[in-house]
Image 1 (cartoon, one colour):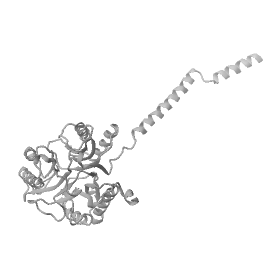
Image 2: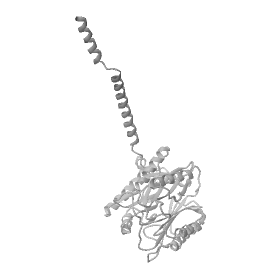
Image 3: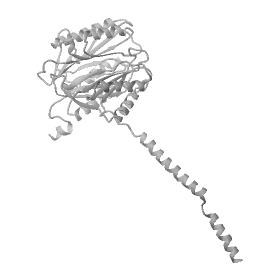
Image 4: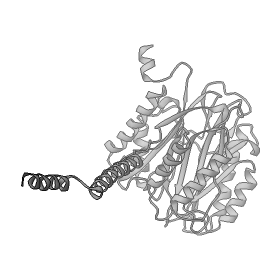
Length: 394
């Protein structure tokens, strides 16, 4: 009897122990938990915050080269941005990209440009350039959603005497018109007058950008640009989807043949209108330049405009520059009703006797829906000035 009781007790104990199926289930559960943990880790890794473009980048003016991406109509905005970035990197092998300015058309989210840029450059372990993104009304080809201007720093000097930045030269009509090639020609003629006034030739122009009220006759606009400045990287865009009159405003960057007497000098060549709020041309020597990304203003009050100028001033100060060192400033308002107020507020920051070269035209939009205008700049940085902290310590 005792033996029978012991037998049943042993059987019950063995039944209570986990069998092969139970052990397999426990192993599977452990593997599943491990897989879930690895999966969560992968998701967390994929959600890492992408680096943001710097507020400004320092580069050597003597080694800067300029490029404009070809128009592409394949795919949506993200693909076109990736294709454009590949084109820029292919065109600037062994050079450091220091500034990009993207003009976006269509209904795509302009913020995608920064995201794609951060992804592509991070994957390739490249330093990010300063970035400006604005929305325009149209590009020269249907379905084209982006064109990007790049500035890169080469290994060897290509502009040994420095650069000149020519302000936007406006040509406009009193009436609306879809054909603006004659206005483009008139604006380019003014740019050419500035080039001649500097003792330069058309082949010295490195980049020319024309802001148009229409690109309906884009082939003629492109032809006029190529004829005027055959060696330049050329770009033209339609500023807004709708317009009230015909206008074209072209700006340019040229290579100098003689070193300026000062690191930064402003001139107003004969034949060009003199403007109280800006200089027609800024000359910079073969020294260090600071190229900034955009600073945006939100809302329309003077205090809001001033805040954007203050933020730009902080960026300049951190890199050893100031408003007195700005060679060229670009303003991107979404309404020209702000133009006079921007100029008025800006006069408190710029030198009244020697304001920088500037371009201010009306754009369709900015990366933030609440933004009223944006500004970026090119400034010189004198030797020995490497930031606000260093200057204070010195």
